[in-house]
Image (cartoon, rainbow, N blue to C red; front, side, top):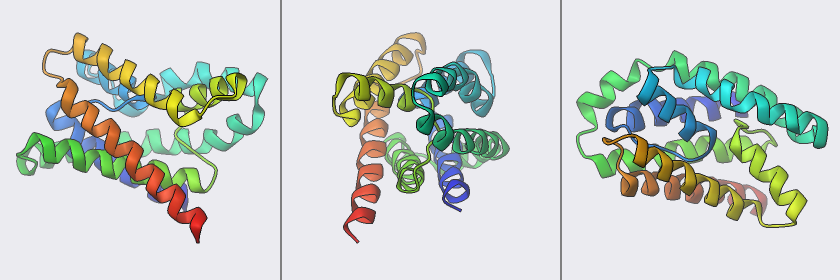
Length: 188
């Protein structure tokens, strides 16, 4: 159930809020959005393309990460593409870019947080960052944030319409809302 609800939140956040303004998130989702904006590739399909090599690495070096993220990645990719028509409503009703950036970040972060509480994720570069953090004995949140900033920096350079500050707001909202949900759950 966490995968279903989390994927729905992510799909609405991406399609209703981020796509209309060509906003970016970090990680594999951000890379997938860059592919979508540049090459018109479906976001979910691009997530699969980006994540599969990372999942192959996880399979050989840390199988629990592989098994915990596989279902989340596959289902969320499908749901994101299924809900793509929401971008039309987003273009009509999301008229303030900062509201779109923050709203998208909160929705995506809530979906990610819910999935993390139940030991799953959408995989991708977050999975890679977890592997690096485990190897370096570093805080995975810091590694994930650095990867996210790198992704939106590259995306802002490649996409003239992409706004770095709005995308940074999205990344911060994703991080804050997912952290809030994970901490709230573990306090209960």
